[in-house]
Length: 338
Image (cartoon, rainbow, N blue to C red):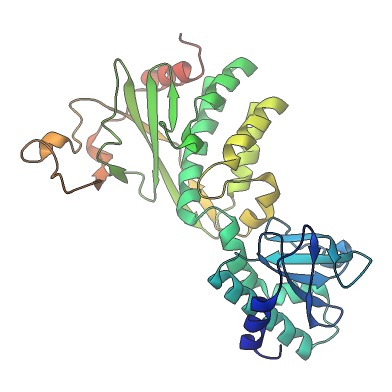
């Protein structure tokens, strides 16, 4: 396995692990091993005690443990890096293994922390499949910003905090971002906080006496920003102040977006860019609000050949609700005004 293509071919010949027992191939004797996990994910093992990786961020794609190898009776203490069980994932793993081998050729006694540091740019590519996309993180941050405001401004009891948390429907993906007692709220986060991409039907679906509000959040991602997604979640957990409610929040986060957010993933999100976030601005969407509607088309509806329509909505011409209306919406969401 002296070349990149040689490592690619080696990965292609590795057997999938039987249970937790792996058949590994040595990339570098006593230091680096390649294997396939139980689901066919390529895995690269960096041998060493947990202490030898002090300061390294662990998570789903980068984890330390004792692993069972077919070639040895004793478990292998190692940090393992995983990539997706796809052609691109296997190719990425080959690059990581090749670069790790090259580092060891240059410095055979390099310690594990320094080795991981030198591979950081490659490892970040592996971690990208294990965290929410940049777009999903912005969307989640916007929804969490509103949840934080509801808890801080609209609740005084544990029961109200439970109601406020249950009103957050974003992770369910089949309802409004927030819904409770005929109050529906859609949250839109953008860099300007005033121009949002919306779907034609998104701001039109209302039933009975339902009132619909659009909550705008101005968010800017920046590497220098101190606020990280994990820290916002920690602040909300503190605002909930109840262990059972914290567990409910974590369950909701676990099914958000493409891969969910888990507490164990916090170190991965600390590597991501931070956020500058401003307080939300709430606007009511009514029958007279200037938005795109079916009657905006001739003859009263979009062409039958068009499946979905999205457009950029500038909300600067839509007045924000008053402070009293905002407080009333929060009260409805937390069950105080029944």
